[in-house]
Amino acid sequence: MPSTDLNARIAAIWRIESGAVIAKLARMLRDVGQAEEIAQDALVTALERWPRDGMPDNPGAWLMTTAKNRALDRLRQEAMQARKHEAIGQDLAALRADVTPDFVDDLDAARADDIGDDLLRLIFTACHPVLSTEARVALTLRLLGGLTTAEIARAFLAPEPTIAQRIVRAKRSLTAARVPFEVPDAKQRNTRLASVLEVIYLVFNEGYAATAGDDWMRQALCDEAMRLGRVLARLMPHEPEVHGLLSLMEIQASRSAARVDPHGRPVRLAEQDRSRWDHLLIQRGLAALARSKQLGGARGPYALQAALAACHARARSAEATDWSQIVALYDALAQVAPSPVVELNRAVAVGMVFGPQAALEIVDALAADQTLGQYHWLPSVRGDLLEKLDRREEARAEFTRAASMTRNTQEQEFLLRRAQQAVAPGRIS
Image (tube, rainbow, N blue to C red; front, side):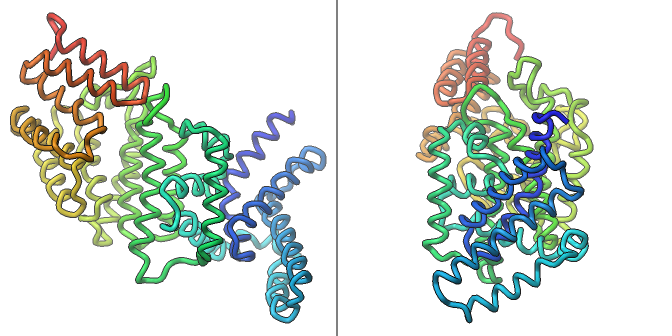
């Protein structure tokens, strides 16, 4: 096999296995930073040996065993340096017993639950509220997604040194705060789980509608967020909002192919070719939504947003959309998770049911909200409503203002085209 193909295969294996390896090491070492460092050493060893010796039959088990042996060496060295033989000896004995000759053969069957527990601990650690949102996102993609620093930097259009420092500081912060490597207890569970779900959804949203750059979407980030969502749903099968978020992401992602034209330009929902929607993802999303409701989570914020997405997914055409149901769902969402953004989206639905003037009154009331001051969708929605009311020059001004507020090139060009079309003779309304 050519070296480039082998390296690509090793990278793919690492993407799949790295989370489990780092999670196991973190439980052994009680230090996420050391765990990732040793896991990376195991990867480097694989890159050196596998091209020469051939790829092992179970590459994941090889990486796990190699990394665990290095962790044991690290613990031995620390034990000798600290001269705490009695205290650490018991831990080492237990760890040695964990690395048996049958480890490779029994990995999948005997250790599956243990690995799942460790992964759950790692997810909650990487998304700990002691870290900033940006740090949680970067660390999660690094530890659980197996992405390199360069890949994370490219995904978020940030300088690589900035991302590297962000990850380093995040690991130091966890160590300094003595964050325990554990699943939070019942008292902390809801708050900590909300932090985890927020991180996953932020990753998805950045992929679904990139805030900056030349691409309208970054599919790799959407895929990674859905993968993390599926892992979490498998590890926490009785949490309704986990299924609600997974449903929301899968239904939204089902439209990906139809959201851009052949030139990569955005296509509005009403103009999308619904035959290009991924119906398997829709089915999976609807099943996850049903599971969330079955667990009593129908009024959870993510489940409500998934229900909104499901209204569009079930409509065979834009004209068949049940906008009255969408307004009702936004009313419910505004009660459990009130925000100006929810109200802005509700205004769009109100306009579809009661006309653009009714929606414009809501949008104009929102214009005074400081949190929407730099939110480009506010003038964009207002421009759309003004255009429907045949107030062309005002619509053009709003689309132009919206274009000036976004850092995404495709979105900018899309809004400028709408500004031109708003005042173009013979335009199609």
